[in-house]
Length: 131
Image (cartoon, rainbow, N blue to C red; front, side, top):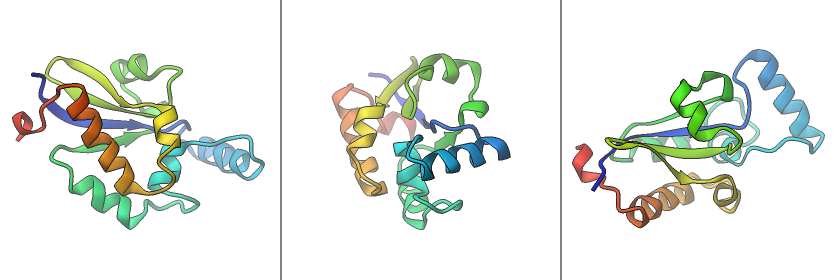
């Protein structure tokens, strides 16, 4: 059984100032949407308190990166599939929650935690081995 070492969320937006502005303008115009952004930030430039609390309550670290902040391995695993949440396991990267599933969660970080827990169980991964 593969052990989950950490989680990596990938936004469907660049993290540079220009990328943030482009995403915000696109969102206002109805041309851009990132379900993971909605869960963690909504309309605020600051991460929601509930999102920070949910991430902190997970048994492994949960890092979230923008498109232009991905490592080569994360870029390869997420290319054309963002937003997404990946698990880094002792056997490699595994997609846990895809774009469509994130879109069904609304803007509630607690629903993301439930989806992550369900996905870890469904894929036969092990949280406890990462303690």
